[in-house]
Length: 102
Image (cartoon, rainbow, N blue to C red; front, side):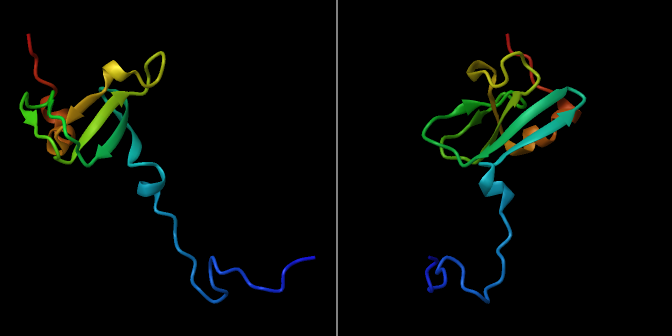
């Protein structure tokens, strides 16, 4: 027999709260560009620093940035294929492209 109490999770007259897709997907999105299909994740930063392939400068520890990897690879996400970019460098990669180190 059903309970006579109403649920306290969402009051009867309360408005529906829209789903926050950014939070639900963990900040991941799929992008298609002339250079391929990418999975892009926005991160807040952690205790490591990374070298940005767009400008060849360091992404300081604790700095918000973008992690991107190709989605059209054989195995999907490969740990070695992820690259940490400054957000501005990722947005400008179509105009500049990655730097060549070597």
